[in-house]
View 1 (tube, helix red, strand yellow):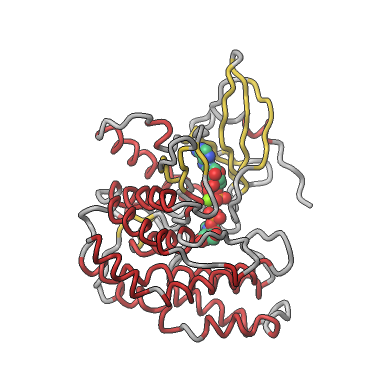
View 2 (cartoon, helix red, strand yellow):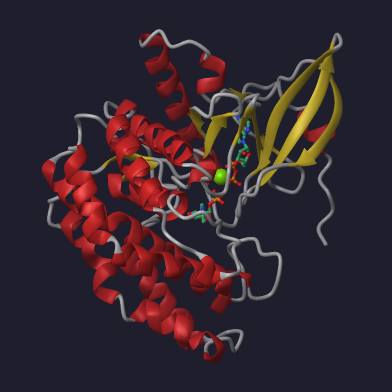
Length: 368
Ligand code: ADP
Ligand code: GN1
Ligand code: MG
């Protein structure tokens, strides 16, 4: 087992005031290691989020962190221009190191970054009420809207072809051929589910390549777990996790939102048959997203929005399945077949979103 990092020492490199008290693992992200760090300044408690970047996945951590800082600052300027209140809870504030850099490189060659902790707010792995879904959806719609004037090409890609679903399918096909862990036979039904949906994988990419859909600045990991919700007022406060922000289709965010915010079940749900779609939540997702993204979506984007959820659930499931076949090298896992179970849970969502696609189309038309 890996040694617990010395967060007290790491925190000493950042511009924190106060005396270090303690640090604990925080959140449920699959990639980076997140800690909540508590210090004390003249009897006042100060909290920060400290994160160790997964350098196997983010091979250029400085570019990745830079993109996040740029986007956070852009969003903050937008809030200032709108004369928004509660600025420090509505935007991420990264804390620089004492030498003025955005990250600290430790003795093991790993990058760390820090930001102010946003109090009285929480993220959730799935929505429990339509209001929660609505608030998360508004937050992502607004996020895209506030970044319209940031040129997508000004943010270098951190993981190339991140949402290129056909390439994700190719990676699955390669993993099947390789069968590194002898897991293909036991995953056959789940594999077939993905392979039978090859045409769906290409739907957005083809339109993008034909120039029918515009590239915008998108979050690219817009699961509900990445929106902080105010604890007392159930209000969407701040979009977090800016690691993958960059050029993308609006569908990537709306799709991630649908696949996580309209089923009362998280990615860890093992009782696959118990996963059901909640059309009240779907209505809230559409209404919230289109409220937040008011006015800027083109007809070609609106006309294709309804396929986003099934496509992103399929892509995410393909990625979990590929990792299962490869031996669980990408996503953190807690037990042996967790990535296979995660893939099945995503594919169940694909089926349900396929069955309800006509209703989604109607909901989107109603809100345009
Ligand atoms: P990961 O990339 O591992 O998903 P995140 O950046 O999403 O990491 O952070 C993990 C969790 O930490 C989030 O889901 C959220 O609950 C919490 N979190 C992140 N940033 C902040 C912040 N500035 N204030 C409060 N909580 C935060
Ligand atoms: C990862 O780090 P986290 O948990 O927010 C992944 C996303 C997946 C998501 C599935 C960089 O996000 O793409 O959709 O897991 N992030 C990366 O839960 O691969
Ligand atoms: Mg996250």
